[in-house]
Image 1 (spheres, rainbow, N blue to C red):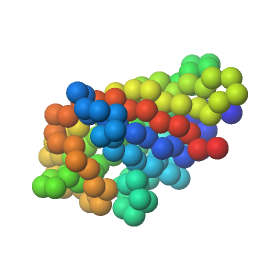
Image 2: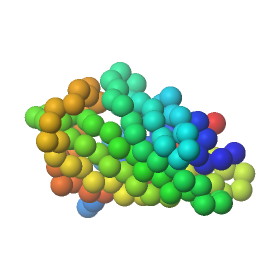
Image 3: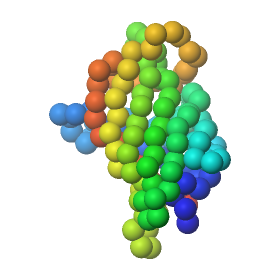
Image 4: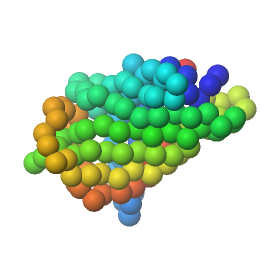
Length: 132
């Protein structure tokens, strides 16, 4: 199975200096990868709200360089979340992702209903697993 396949992902994001129990989970759905360009939708953990998802996936043999970009809304404003890292697959296991994220202040208001507790300037780790 290719890491850059048209498969859904579940991503857990944890801010730096916070417990892994304080994670925010996002579901990346309707993923399509064409010539390295990734598109889809990102849903909150309850699959109630979504925003558009963009990114890239470039296979490098058993690993892939992956980026994900989406807009979310916290209590007061919209923020952009950029996630970048490596997708990989160990023998006999589902593809996994390991990377870093940064939250950026959004200069203009794009519509998004995906809630987040992240603020501009937050950074942290992101891990995920591709759907079967």
